[in-house]
Length: 374
Ligand SMILES: Cc1cc2nc3c(=O)[nH]c(=O)nc-3n(C[C@H](O)[C@H](O)[C@H](O)COP(=O)(O)OP(=O)(O)OC[C@H]3O[C@@H](n4cnc5c(N)ncnc54)[C@H](O)[C@@H]3O)c2cc1C
Image (tube, rainbow, N blue to C red; front, side):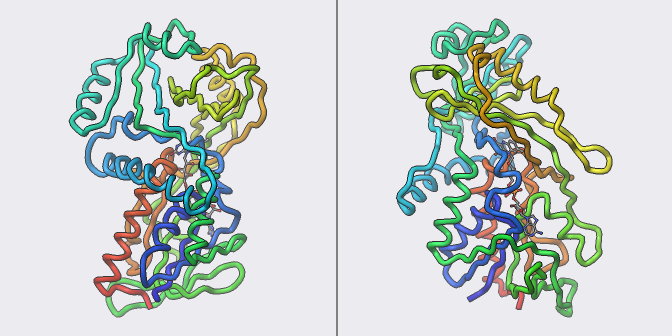
């Protein structure tokens, strides 16, 4: 058996653990210094903007398409395995357009999606108001409705992936931080990581997958070398609210406009978010309450009934933003047996399933080439 160690158990690490758990000949261990979904994943709204994104070709589109496809099988697969329901909003995403909206850009996207077999419906303002009476906003000039996009609860999904992977024999070490690795020179230009140094001892590994989000850069700095990727935090704040009554009588899509999401949770509860706050030159960022107020104002401008809502919970989290196109899914340069699955920035929930499939394929390909570590 080849032993794979995954560093990090956010949604990306958990999805990789689950996909690898059914690969014959692998034993898998996941280490996380905290608990599942304790970092970025625990703050996310779980909005899967794939079809409605303007990514139409190349890697960016392929990852989105593969993820949306895998989610359609993954959610029922996990529900059956675990015998419990998982929140998964199949009502799509409604993106509102405002004065000055470039509608021809959306028409072009709808045309491309049609050729890809994916529906995208442009609606005029009158249609929006008649179908979604909760939207009372004079600035709305129309909308794009994407029935194939989805939304889910990122923490519930991460826990489900952990439970299902555990059933398949994966070992999870929570509360175990990885501080670095011991390397062996291979006689050629590529190094091999033989052992991971953790805060509870050492761990032998044939393969290492770094899915550590913002923890990636410090890890890659050991042994001292310029890290091939620098990941910086971009803060996001969000709220959970409860209205006196549901905003609509029928099940609703996620409503989004001006980068503000209103996510129906069932009953009269909603997630509203999120801010996008960049760090200073030293990489530090603190939540700015004024920016959260602006998000709330934006949500109320779209759905005025939200004005009566009671705030149940408020939180913030840090998105892992790489200094290169997100996400980073590749072998670590200079190493034979370390793979990176990190830097998913604003779309880690959307891209976790495709990332896991890509890491699985990379690993199998490298194992078949005989490029094992130890
Ligand atoms: C407010 C907000 C809203 C968002 N909304 C969406 C959304 O709607 N849709 C979407 O797709 N994305 C969204 N995102 C982005 C998404 O949350 C991230 O892209 C995604 O969670 C990244 O997942 P990850 O597993 O790579 O990282 P994380 O969830 O950060 O997981 C990394 C894990 O690695 C562990 N770790 C780090 N270093 C070490 C170490 N040295 N040793 C051991 N463990 C370590 C950490 O404890 C952590 O558990 C949002 C983010 C925020 C903040």
